[in-house]
Image 1 (cartoon, rainbow, N blue to C red):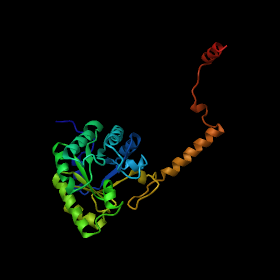
Image 2: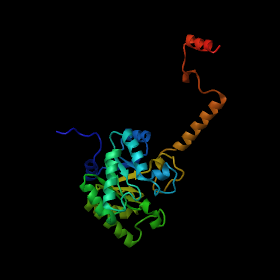
Image 3: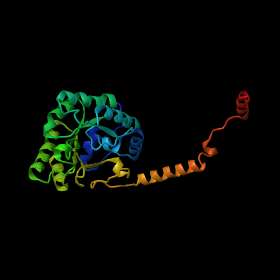
Image 4: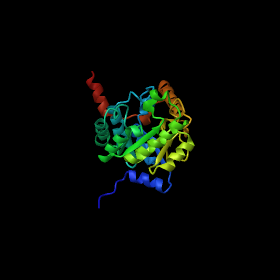
Length: 283
């Protein structure tokens, strides 16, 4: 019998939906954060291209490259032991051809060590999803508000309020399921429409701004911990770490200026004879 993996698998995720257990997913972009998320017991980590805004200070996700994503995914994989790590395929890494999509998806698995990839789109990328899955790489879909299409969508707007878009969302979800995706993210979708999508597909739906009836939820960790400048409507701030960190840094500044840090407890000692010899050699 093959040894059992410590990590959550895509089968575990599917079983969560089957037994009605809510699926929790959150982003992480570095080693230290991944360790905390893993210790908290969150079963899925998304290394999102949202790092372009959250970590790198870009206006949107579009400047993020494959090399940047691989770099951050490696760090997250090193920091976790149990969570299933999903690498976010960045803009233009799967748009040109199926061959490009497969090659870049393979980089996430082979170079970065993630267990799955995520890409945006439904019907239009179903053939690429199918090919990637056929080659043994698990794929998570992403429909609704797709940030890589922000210019086409006219901004970060709720998707699915109109009939044609709502019907397209259903078609996209079904196309991803048929292509072999193991789950699908629904972003900025009206709650009742997201509930309908969840009923209509057999794979887990992971909501972000899509109501409570999705099979699971994903959030950007900086929003959740109070480390971002702007809190989206769909997010909840569970801590105010920015305030705590700012105060700690101010205290550090004050103590260095006052000479109260470092103390003897923060300093290393040297044998008097060694120091005396050093001084003697200076003469």
